[in-house]
Image (cartoon, rainbow, N blue to C red):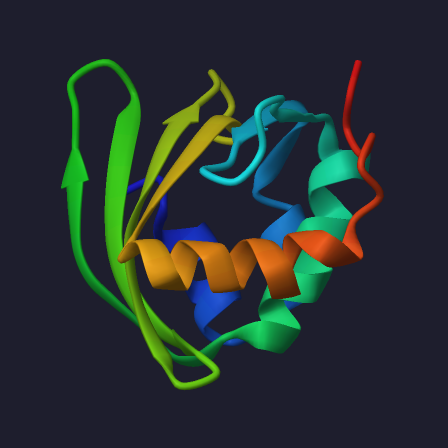
Length: 128
């Protein structure tokens, strides 16, 4: 699976290796922002925060589509909240993530993520 390098990098909380899996023009659509983060320069600071925030991160399952997409089902803890979600990734022709969307549940975990993780990013981060 193309997502194996991303999964290993995130599981080991390795920011440099995580960023190496992203295309320079990656577009990341978050469940807590109206506008996507565009470009590795915008996504990098988010992952720097996330990798410091992840507690008890576990990837549960992965699924691959015929058109270059992969889904990773994950769980982690944010404070006292259990977070569950899906990373939906598409890979470019050289195997880098060029499109990335995240879905998270429950609503209380999504709100906590917005208030703790995304609050650390400037409001215009990644806007093009």
